[in-house]
Image (cartoon, rainbow, N blue to C red; front, top):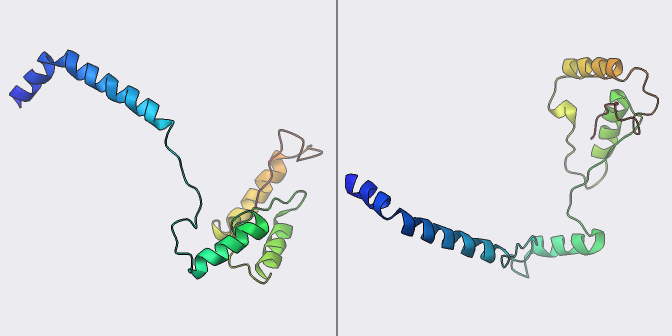
Length: 134
């Protein structure tokens, strides 16, 4: 261990030069790295998953996920909307706050939101308003 530390101390200039050259090479090489975000590139062409994803991308331009925001709805209306979305044919799952929090906590959150948003006329344009996103 002592020989190794002595080597590092004696050769610190060369170690610094090699490190700097590696850093420059990495910085230059970073511009030539391409990230492939296509899900289907690595699947075989006869795979049903690839064919389904290709169809979904060509028809919708996106993957199979959707994000929905409700404005002007209270928690009960959002829960009803969640139930409606879950009942749509082809929807496999819907995730919302009630999947994470207990109903008592949702009641607490509703009361806290009502208290926080008192006097707010338009929750979407008022920067002080707090609303839930689904």
